[in-house]
Length: 474
Ligand code: FAD
Image 1 (cartoon, rainbow, N blue to C red):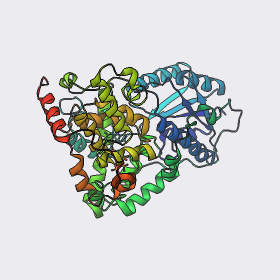
Image 2 (cartoon, helix red, strand yellow):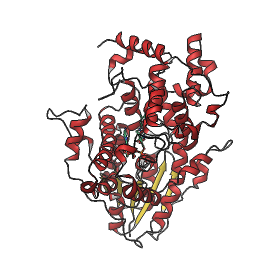
Image 3 (cartoon, protein in one colour):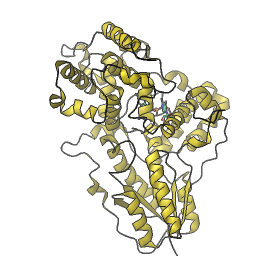
Image 4 (tube, rainbow, N blue to C red):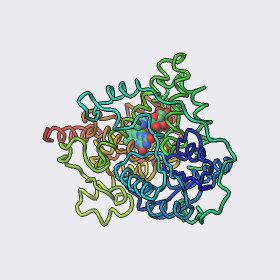
């Protein structure tokens, strides 16, 4: 029997996976994951994402093995490897779940065309977003630029029920082409291995994702609308990396909260609308593939950054700022950037967040906003530099949500927070971490003499930022 191939990408799960279901329905399925370092998308995966991917693939291999579906691991250019594998196996069908980045769509369309020309059945499915970005338009037929009407429109749509995993035992028993050893891909950090904090904090995999979802819906959802803003409480779901990597589908999360919607009201509605922000970020990225590299509001192109944007900005700041620093001003911006990255700004809430990020690969949403605001508005460092740092360090680093949220904080994005909304890290800490327990957890030296003085005067830097903003062309 000719096996069908399921090409896994950002959908590392067996449940609610329409591509896997279609392949299994054919009779014999073989799964393929391609690690394509040259892959399109905003840039190669960051270090924390590589760690997550490694462990996720191990978990996926087990989940699929239990269904009798072997997982082939290959590294190299995806287009070539998919063709090579399908040809070598004499496959009759090729399935995948759709991606929404422009370059990824082009690559997928090329493979689909090749497959069909070769007489193979090729089919793709909606699995990673509740809405397909092209299917939701304003009354004028364009993309949404404001969240509220976007989400009103999307949340009125009917979302299909999640699919069960296919029944086990219908896998492929013929000869398989070679699969690579995951360890040879170098996804895990070595010399030094800095991943202990990640391992303490997470267990990537679909089983863990479902456990976390069930636990959150049972115990966290009722008080979500209040507790979600408090970094000292386990008030939010922590599902973001699992959604990013597709170990849970948005349909599974949507229906899980929907089950308690009537009973819980606000808590569930607030949570659902955060899923809406995820959708909105992808809506933006679909319509603006340059989301990570261009201000959506072009007036911001004229902002006088102390440290400019552009690819490589964060890396320069972290590693080789001496070479990049050509003037005293740049040098001082590089020092500020490094203090921010390392959690030594002298603002405890920001430093706690940056250390939480470094240690666990995740940062609380409220703290992400405060920390990003300090970098962009008080330290005058381009949002793209912060976006790249988060890209490297977050386990949930997402090509749509990360740049969209950075642009939201900076004020340069769609439906963004106005530029003049400059978070004060001290009042934010007093409001959202009133007992200092979050800050105390991450900054044990806070009460000692060696905690740094603030690197910037909040009032002066705020004034300077507002002056710079007022000079931008409208
Ligand atoms: P919950 O509050 O439980 O929310 C449930 C889910 O909704 C999340 O898991 C996530 O998938 C989605 N969600 C929640 N808030 C947002 C939001 N503002 N934008 C988009 N989706 C959202 N989120 C990412 O998933 N990846 C990123 O790379 C990312 N970068 C960010 C950068 C900055 C500067 C900021 C301010 C926010 C960023 N976010 C990002 C959004 C948000 O901080 C995280 O999704 C959230 O903290 C994840 O925690 P949670 O799963 O407990 O969220």
